[in-house]
Amino acid sequence: MSKLTETVDELAEKLEGIIDRVCSACGNSCCHQGTMMGSQDLLRLHKGMLLEAGREQIVRAGLRRRSAELRVDLAALEQTAGQLAEALPDSQHPELDRLARHLAGWREFCDFLESDFALNRENLRFLLRFSGIRANALRVVQRLPEGRDRLADVAASSGASFRLTRARIAPHRCLFHVDGCLAGSWKPVKCASFFCTTEPNVLAEIGKDMTFEAFVLANFRAATEEQVLRAIELELELGREYIAPKIVVGSSDELVSKVEAALKAEFKFAEVRREETPFMLSSREAYALLDNLPDYMAYVRTSRSVDGGALYELAVALDWLRIAGKPMPFYLFAAALSPPTALTHPLWADGTMSQPLGGLELYALE
Picture 1 (cartoon, rainbow, N blue to C red):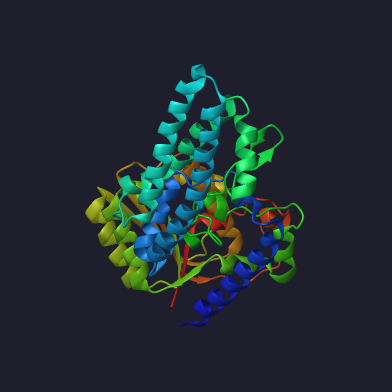
Picture 2 (cartoon, one colour):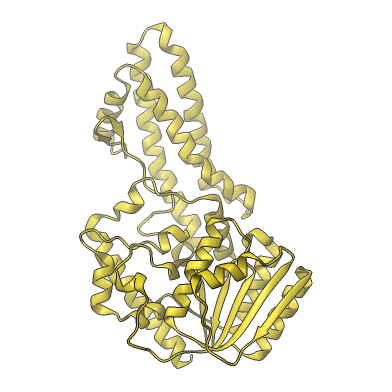
């Protein structure tokens, strides 16, 4: 390993330790408040399960554990439905029949989580159905007389997860949260970039132990040139909706040439702009440049170096494009990271809740 990749690994581990320590103080409440994977997030995870050794096994084992928990909730709902069937008049039985159909869907979902389902887009999309299944079942229960209160009582005695908050049942935790995020570094961008600024303030705690430059490095992942090339080629194989921008530090001309060849096999045109100066574009400049790229074009840029502030500016522009649904076949290859300076990006200096590097694929090469 190079000195850069060793530093990246050390700082990434340090950052993860701080986040785990601080976020556990509130019981990872963000993950328990209805935060969910979206369709684009699942594409990111799908790619990660194919690229990262062991990630698929972690996700499958975690989903089986979640299925066991969801079956406890299902049993509580079935018990509640049985009590309501005995207590309610015949006029309410159509609602109970509707509830039974939703619970059958719940059971089918648990069966799916426990199966050895093929790793493809269609099956991963099925994982998005649970929020709707749960919401539909609870909607029926809460419409029925005493339904919500009976479910809360059953849940309290059975260990099910349903809890009342004011006049409604609390949101459930993310399907992929099982002793931490099953997605690892492939978690949704909105989660990877989010740093709670309440008390305890995770960003403030990070600032006590890490400089801005150290935080930037902690968001990189150490990789080989072969791994970076494989990530790019896999995205092209899976489809353009999987393509995500890449920032690579420490790359060789050979890697850039291989990436250029892979892109030219997929895109009508791949532009490679080589610069001997440090990379520096403001967020607005980067957005204007990349937003105007035609759909048939990939854009590669090489620079002598890049610093943390420039990466922040670029990350903000790339996030705007992501939110707008703009394809992003953009690749920045820098020979080195610029030496640390006394300057920090305003988003870091001001303790802004969203720190944009978390959602980027940043690679430091061995």
